[in-house]
Image: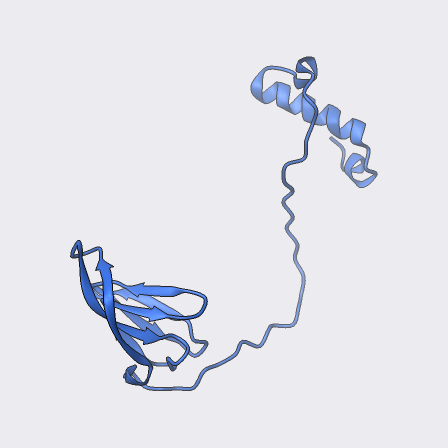
Length: 138
């Protein structure tokens, strides 16, 4: 199908091209079935230059997350197949550099992160938590 059909919005030419390709791929013509065409999704890819967004940064806090500690509560630890009392941290009070060893929970207003047994969460300068398996090589 020539791109001009799309550029000009020639729906008849687009429909003919669709039916021809459908017949080629699947061996039957939807027009004979009386099936109306329906646009389900459109994918667009674009390239351009934009200003890079400035991401908020949080204060440095060192490895110790004690200032964000809330207490503990029971949570399921899949590696152990049991419910256990685990440490709970306030995700909004964590600081860059904090390290939390699992099992633990990090609670935020928008999500709760399970740091499961065998994992460690590190907090970056943007407040994101990166979970790494303890046996993973650096």
